[in-house]
Image 1 (cartoon, rainbow, N blue to C red):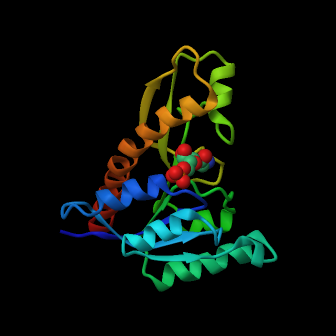
Image 2: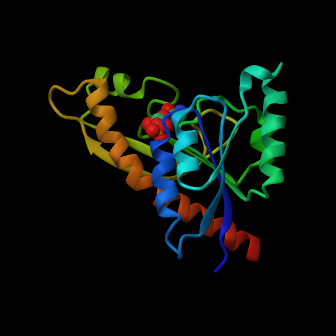
Length: 197
Ligand code: GAR
């Protein structure tokens, strides 16, 4: 069975990364993790990835003059590791059209809202302020517009009386951990089918 070389891009804690790494231990999973890359050298997820036996690299955006030179450095690392598919998992840098074009159809993201509602930041506070009865998360293809690409999958959770942004975030995060491995597998199967045709 063909398995795509997977890179996971993070900026922090890496709990979604962890759920993806666990899923890839199944023989039938259509991707194998090759590299975890963070734009922050102190991201806790880097050590978690190493503990999992995966190469983990920091490419600190602060060391580059421009967004594009930072992205060129990431792109080189990804090419050097023969990456087929990228999963953004709490990667908190907006990517330029230069990078997005290079990875078009091969890069997906998880976002903590039911897109198209609440692209960008502070999704849970905005859902509570709006009085929504439901919240959730979305996995989508990455396109040039922030959080605008075609949707691969969504998971819904109820908003409960007395929720704060933190309690809602914790409920949504559990749903993220279930959704992302399934949605990444769907995306990989599509990429493999496309390569075969
Ligand atoms: C997750 O909730 C993810 O959806 C969100 O950051 C968190 C990262 O947590 N991503 C975004 O907001 C991207 N716009 P994690 O590091 O524990 O996976």
